Length: 247
Image 1 (cartoon, rainbow, N blue to C red):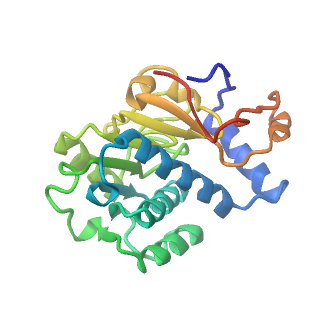
Image 2 (cartoon, one colour):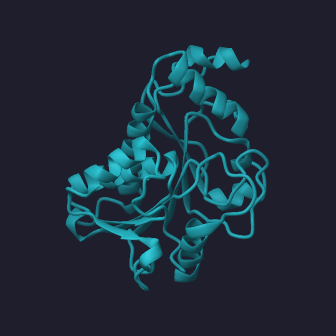
């Protein structure tokens, strides 16, 4: 576990960081998504451990329509490239409603040996139960209120499966990233990989219990950027791009 104690941010502060990254520092959303997905794939394999052959692993990615889903699709690509059997449950289907960066990643996955499943067409009964790992990339830090639509249905299926081997991207879906409250449906993750800085909702109850073991990943935020939202420069990733924050 790192000795560095990072600042924590609300959803509004994280949104400001994302905006500064893109519009003032010229770091495109696709670059951030790529780093998030690569780190997510690396942590997924670390969690599973080195004792299993990669081509024997089954990882299921639950991907939403937004940028969090794009991070999940990026991780699916990296995992597939390493020989893992990857299935993706698409909460948004394959429609034009997907964000452009997400659509681009979905287009790439269609060319790879990745099973793509539109949740609207039905979710295979045992797919979550039999997974070596479930990656929750349904909704990120911006959730307000309860989960709805296909994402809510997917959470129900994950919870019903009884599989606790869940890795959440940024925050467990269903969790308010600012105040730590949970809606009617929420993922209980064994591990959460949060991005750039921890969200306040991950360190206070009940969010803390939903997040499980908490890791922090680098998405390329320049340390000096944080001054612009009133924080000290956060120079967290000198030695590695993923750091453990709690046990």
